[in-house]
Length: 203
Figure (cartoon, rainbow, N blue to C red):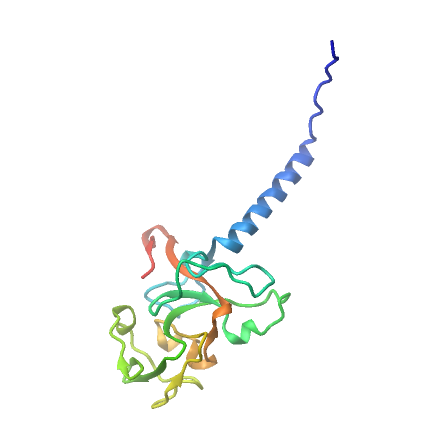
């Protein structure tokens, strides 16, 4: 008959360390490929998003980007006009990959590659036609910044996107820094989960 030896118990400290490491790996995986949580810091997207709102952003819609590479896994669809999108604007995207001061922005997608954009009397025009999408048309837009002054028309390069904040008067957006590249898209804002009175789908 074989002699049985009691199993050795892991130390409490080791168990805690392993649990923390596993949790960190899982959180990094979920954040990189599935979703991310953000807190809205400014008034640039009022009334759609208010300062202090906490939101979920899905990366599956447009396809998650593999960390530290330019490779993007195919998503369910391409970004569409009217979507509220998290992305890196050009002045942040050009920073080194190890620069953790990069700031991600959240704005509404107004035009895609090949479109021509202008603002007249507070309305947005794409390819010469006034945008009637209520998510965009309900806001008043100002001719500000270096890229969309009065009577100016901007051509959006292929593979790039033009973004505006819903609260145009206090938004730093494509009017100031130009278009954002497809590879710098992070994800689609889908849901406000805090505070309780603001819970709901982001339109």
